[in-house]
Length: 483
Image (tube, rainbow, N blue to C red; front, side, top):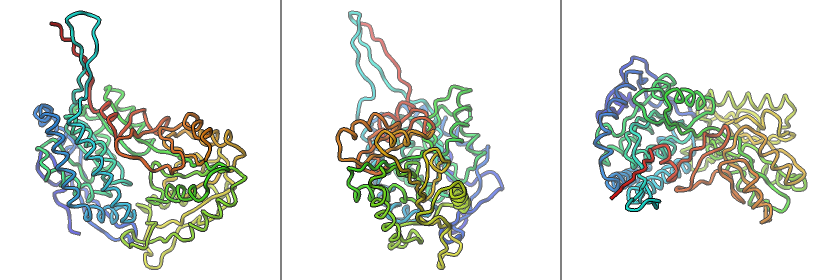
């Protein structure tokens, strides 16, 4: 790939960054250079926010159905570049191509869902206690929304925010993670081709931590939507609190799958393998804990280890590969150090447990799919988000111990239970402290239109991928009409 000289979109114009600093994106499977980009500076952030503010008065007055029609066109444009976009995502962050294609499909589904919101009423009519009075509520856009997103889902996590912001009448400044700049560029180009007016969508490609900090604290930003680590989310929340800027946080998770003795073990194994190793475990909803009743521990582990041996590591563009590399060498180092610490603390390596050395990809960031036994719910490996293909197996005697183990972390994003008992299924829906609960399904099976978000350190109570996204993207106004 060549040098990207115009990777920022500001006020409808493609342009380079104002600073002199450069960086490179690299294929995590090979270590090879993909493309070079400039690093967006504070001046670029200011320019993007100014452009969004300038476009907002006109865009907010665009009828909601017309804003929805824009998103319908965006969906068509994404369909047209689906293969190119998916391949670029795989090259930049490593996930296998089938997953990247699935991410584009999920993005298109979200786009069409939010497009439909342009035709649905966003307010309500309420009865009045007074005669000759009508009361109604209306939702008005907040203004400029800063969207700050990570690398593990290069376009989907941004789309959930951007589509909700646009259809509700806001303008957007988007700062994606630097290492997926090419994917962000293709996605933004689709928005432009669909007819997004100048300044309504602005892209800060290659922006690092400093650009993110400047954007999230900018006086011209009216709301912040962030997906990323809990530590950074807390920092953003603290900064936004000083100006009472609304902020939506979708943060980390330490998700568990509970397997009770009455469950279908083959079905449970399916859910565990998909939830643990899709995207090489680099999902906020990844199942990094399996909490299993002791009476079925051995047959379940036997099935999981058998399936683990069948996984093929390699480049995500290879159709025979079902486990790609970790996104960066730094992420590989982090995963390796956490597993080493867990083993030193007494965990038993049941499978994997080390870096994977692939002869055809000697510079790749590969880690073996790993199961660790002998883990207690209080151990660090059972409480720390690993963000890699590592699963801690925790043994319990009964349902009560399973629930206690599930709820023992500071996170609360996604939980799952496998059981054929309606009694335990309904109890789990109440007892498991997480924003999403699955019964007889893995921890990563969200659908468009269903509220998504976490409790405790997994989020601050807001929900995405549904109409509840408008709770941050709009202000609710009550109107009293006397006659």
